[in-house]
Structure formats: structure tokens, C-alpha cells
Amino acid sequence: MAYDPIQMMITNKFKTPASALRFLLLSVLYFLLIHAANGKVHHHKFVIRSAPFTRLCSSKNILTVNGQFPGPTLKAHRGDTLVVKVYNQANYNLTIHWHGSNQVRNPWSDGPGYITQCPIKPGNMFKQIINLSTEEGTIWWHAHQGWARATVHGAFIIYPKRGHTYPFPKPHAEIPIILGEWWKEDVMEVPNVANITGRQPNTSDAYTINGQPGYLYPYTFKMNVDYGKTYLLRIINAVMEEEIFFAIANHKLTLVGKDGLYLKPIKTDYIMITPGQSMDILLEANQRSLGHYFMAARPYFSVNGARFDNTTTTALLVYNNSHKHHKKSPILPNLPPYNNTQASTIFTKKFRSLATKTHPINVPKKVDTHLLFTFSVNLLNCTHDKPCNGPFGMRFSASVNNVSLVHPANIDFLSAYYYKVPGVFEMDFPKKPKREFNYTADELPEYVLGTSPGTKVLVLEYDASVELILQGTNVLASDNHPIHLHGYTFYVVGSGFGNFDPKEDPKNYNLIDPPQETTVGLPKNGWVAIRFKANNPGMWLLHCHIERHASWGMNMVFLVKDGPTPQTQMIPPPKDLPKC
Image (tube, rainbow, N blue to C red; front, side):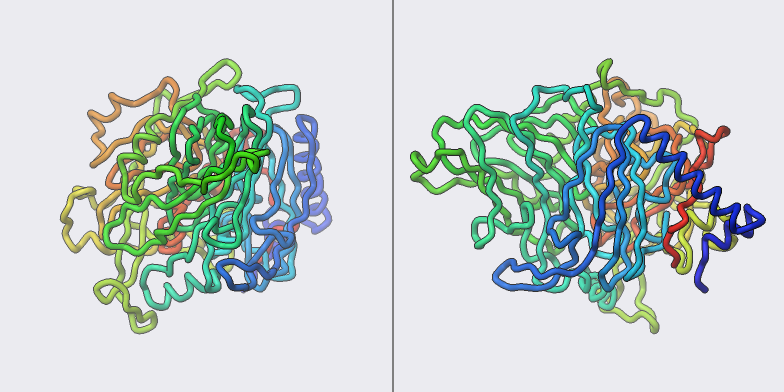
């Protein structure tokens, strides 16, 4: 049965449709006025439609925004508001997520399908409001329905508040660098084929930099620089399936920000960036022998025996006037080997927040809510109504605390909660694994392979101080999982390998200047400890940003209750909220 949010509002909250409409209009107007008083309101139009593109010597139609791949770059200042009208002119249900924006009190525009909204149906439009608060730096936007984000994505640049500056010297120029993938087949059919077979999805045919596969093909992105100038690279990993090593030949990189938050500068020869993460990198064009230099990216992949796209994508860093000096072919940078977990760990262990007067942090020191989540790749039996021929005659699945998230069919989580619709979800997601075992042992008993489907949420009281231990497991296969939390930034106070030790590991926490992130890499057979204050009411998705894992069920939902005052409560839903 179709769900009508306006009718539910009238039935549950108002006596007449007119009073409901007045309330909605006044709420939206109030919301916009509050944010407009602190910053500018930007208006954008996103039209999602198919468009022809040629890569790898063949052409096909892909989903695009405004005919672009990657999509348009959004720009705003800290504290601004964006109003984006999203028109779905494709043949698929779609949603758009603003990855890294906290969407304070406004989960209705967050974007994950069946979590905070029903998908936008073909031929329909949804006006999403993005209210920027503490975000500053590079974040991004992408589709959050099926595998559409493979081509429906773009950069989102947030400058300091007007009248304020970067915490580093202003660069000469800035360049978005979006790492992506290309499939020769229709990428929207990739998960459908995998679902039928129960196997791992087909891998991509090439990685891309700003939509181009690189020097071995006719399509290569080129970045022109002047000697002696410094450039800000806004790097985004929009890859669906793999973490990525990235470097530029003969050039050092200086990491100064991540996920729309600043870090203490880190000089490095390479970066490891997971799907979902964004990084701000300063590049000094300091090579006196003017010429061409490769920037290159290839996967970090640590799963033994699994298939992956092991290609390398390249782009060119070109010094202006280099034609007078350029005689040699460009060289590739030294990238770590595909399975070099040590290289990944050495890089990520360096992250520290600025923690200055102008960019303070507020790490929860006292914790009242302790959580432990295990992240596993599982197997399920094939059934008569869902036959398959995956590993051991079974099908892949994935879980958080041994629960594989199942979405509601005719309503989203948030609307069901707001309108008190019964029977849609249960509020008993486990705070720790119901079945404890040696999570990272080399050999595990067969009984841990299975998982249970569930439409569950975990309830957090408003303003709770939360410590969440993300625990990797060696069930079936261990991996480095990029875990993204919607609606929040969090502090990464600790990490390590093996099983988390609640007595010993907290002794080594960093509570002075831990990095703030929105997407953190959970190391292969390891753990990460994060802390945050549950002060943003709504329904918020936590999930692995490797798409095959998410599609197999490695997701869960937090329900954060309203606070005691109107300023600590969710705003009402918009009148054009999509219907299922």
C-alpha cells in the first residue's frame, strides 16, 4: 500500500489539511531564515538522466547529473545553506546523499533510501536542504540507491566563513581530484547479477581520475601547474569497491584535512584513501626540471583469494612551459603493493586534529553509552525461492553484530518513527554481539558463518556520550572496512589489531587531539574506537562504504531521540517528501 506522509500528518497531528500546510510552510521558512541569517542560501538544480559516454574504446549510456561525469562541483562557505532541487529523469528510483554534511536536525534531506526518505521515483522531484554547520574543507555528494553512485557523484567544497582564512597559507589554485571506476557493462545491473548468483559482484574494468582512465587510453586528465606555486588538491574516493593508494611522482604531499575537517599537516609520499573519504592535500610544484609527472592510483586490497580490479589509473601533472624542457616520458610514482596493510596503517596512524583556539575540539571524556559492533562477511544458505551458486553452494551476506539490515518496503525508517507507524522496525538492535567468539582467529567454527536478517534500530538518548568499538572479524574473510556514520562527525580515539581489550586498550587512547572523521577505515582483523555526543536527533545510517558489503547487509541504523527544547528537536518533514 502506498504511504502518504501528508495524510498521516493530518491524521496524527492536525485537524485540517490547511493547518498542516501552514505549519509545514512556516517550519521551512523558519528553517531557511535561521540559516540565511548566518550565511548565504545557494540554489541548485540537479537533473539525473542517462547520457552517452565513451571510455575504454566503447560507448554506453550512464546515469549523470546535468549530463556531467563526474557531476557538478558544489561550493559554499561554512554556515551557508544549499537548496538543491533533484529531478529524477532516469528509469530508476534514486536518492542523493550529502556525504560529510551533518544535516543538523534535518535528517529528511540526508538521502539514504528507505532510511530517511523513500526514493525519488522516475519523473518526480525532491527539494533537499543542506544546512552547513561545522563542516569546512572537502566533502562530496553521491547517489545512495543501488549502484548509481558509480557515476552519480561530485565534489562539495566548503570554504571558511566569510572573513576567515585557511589554517595554512592560501594556495595558488585548487583542483578536485575524484577517484572512480569504469565498467564496460551496465553498472546498474552489476548488483542484480550478483544477487541472482549469490557471488561477488563483477569487478570494474578500470579506475579513473576525474572520469578518465589514464595514460594508456585516449582519455587522460591533465593538471597544469607553475613552478614555485602551491596547489590544494581536493581528493575524493568515489570508488565503489576498493581502498586506494595515491601518489605523484617526485612530489611530496601534505595532508591538511579529511572529511571536511582540518588535521595537523602530515608530509607523505602517498596517501591511502578509503571509499567515502575525502582529503585536502597541499602540493608544492617544486621540480626544477620542468616536465610531466604521473599521478597514479591503484587499490589497497587485503582479502586473500578474492577478485579485485588490480589496474592502475594515471593522470598527468604538467608544468607550464615544460614543452621547452620536456624530453623524457613521465615516470610512475612508487605506490605501495596492493596488500600492504603496514603502509596503510603507517599513514592513517598519523592523523591528528588541529585542536587550536580557532579550530577547537571537544572529545567526550566521560562515556555513558558503551557499544561494541562486529563487522563480518557471512554466508547464507540458498533457498528454493532464491537459488544461488556462490561459495560452498551458498550466497554472500554481511552483518553488523550478526544482523543483516533489511529495509522496509513501503515506508522509510524516519517517517515510520515520526508518524508512529507500528510494525515497521524493532528497537532492539544489540549493543554488543549476542554471540561472542575470538573475532580475529585464523580458524573459526562454521557456526559463526551465518547471519540473521533484521529491520532493527538502536535507540540513543539525546546528548548521550557514546563510545563505539568497531571490531573487524575474520568470519569467512577479513577486510579493511570503511565505516561511515551519517549525521555526525566522531573522534577516532584509538585503533589496533586483534580483538579489542576493554581493560588495556583504553590506556592508549588519544583524548588530546584525536582526528575528527565521518568515514574511518576499520583495519583488517583490527578495531577502532570512536566517540561522539548523540546531539543530532533523527535516524542515522552507519554502514560499510564498500558497496558489495553494504548491499549484503553491513548496515545498521541509530535512532537519536529529540532533545528537551525546540532547538534540540528534528524539524518537521518537508511537504514534498517522496512517497514509496
